[in-house]
Amino acid sequence: MHYELYYWTGIQGRGEFVRLALEDAGAGYRDVAREQGDAAMQPFLDGAHAGARPFAPPFLKAGRLVIAQVANILHYLGPPLGLVPDSESRRLQALQLQLTIADLVAEVHDSHHPIASGLYYEDQKAEALRRAEDLRKQRLPKFLGYFEQVLDQGGGRHVLREHSYVDLSLFQLMSGLDCAFPQAMKKLSPKLPRLRALQQRVCERPAIAAYLASPRRLPFNENGIFRHYPELDG
Amino acid sequence: MHYELYYWTGIQGRGEFVRLALEDAGAGYRDVAREQGDAAMQPFLDGAHAGARPFAPPFLKAGRLVIAQVANILHYLGPPLGLVPDSESRRLQALQLQLTIADLVAEVHDSHHPIASGLYYEDQKAEALRRAEDLRKQRLPKFLGYFEQVLDQGGGRHVLREHSYVDLSLFQLMSGLDCAFPQAMKKLSPKLPRLRALQQRVCERPAIAAYLASPRRLPFNENGIFRHYPELDG
Image (cartoon, rainbow over all chains, first blue to last red):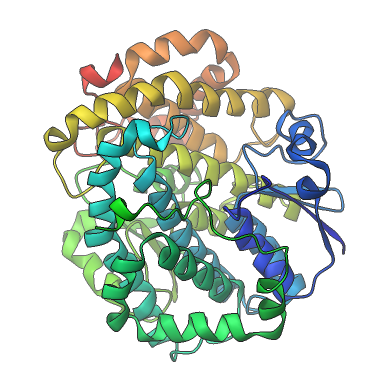
């Protein structure tokens, strides 16, 4: 199967979780908006294509299927890409963990946009200072502590006891948080040895290392989800 | 299969989306925390049970499986309860729609808790006024307009062309929004005829009507997700 990924150009954003899975598996895919511009996504968002209508990017075209929502896309891609264990119970566990990652990603987004995604950061900076403090002090320790425990219970090397798209997403999550909140993450690190080791192992996987060194991997920037605003890092 | 649902007592909350599916299908289930208290959930959250460890309620026990995250639970329950079409593509579409509902539910929560879920509403009321205004003016029209269009494209009666758990969740979403934002929803209603008709059809389903009239259906209240604070309704 040759896949078509649709996501906003210029940022890693939520599309990156899908991109990492495709790259790790060596899947054939086109990054359509990067080739044709963001306007290529509009007919899908307008419902002009057959298949499930996406509410927002990213979405994946696989043959006639159109699939939106990161966790849903990864749930679909897991089996053909060999990125999820075979059993139904493990697939459900993978989806559950991915949805919990998605919850934290949404909270990270809201740490710089706590009032409205349509407003500039500068127009909600006072609120962002308050929300980011709660993220650093309450939410990051809670979420990352949870993933650390799940890793530990699974034997320490893989969150699902074998390599999966969830490991790739945890790598992306940790890398994004390191970029956005370097001080806070440095403080948390001693409590997250397994997550840190997992992050390192993922970035050493040959296909991931090659991808990260390629021009396809955009740097984190101040238009994406993981933004480094020093004042939000405490 | 006899199911065990675990969710906070005293509120509808996210657990209600699962409860409506179980009730509509006439499934045998226990609402464990309501019988035994919220403490019954702790061993699962502490990782003391086998099976996937939940980050937060709700979670469902089905035999040996433990499944968390509302959309994941409904994805699992859909086939055995007859609440999702058979084909893989329609199951993916259902999951995608449910995840989009979940995104809006999170935004509704944050409209009264834009800074921190651990703080009282009164301690983030100024920020809530700003965020709720954006929700009413930008986000509700966008999300609900999307669901209205998907309904329209699916023939108008069901969001997936046949009855599914997504219809039940859209009923819950609309009912919750009516409670929390009665003025805003009254203004939006003329643009949402299909969603309104769907909401009405769902609440007339015999099993749902019986459930809504039972003591098992708690009223919306100011501890849940859908809270009526008149000042947030504009």
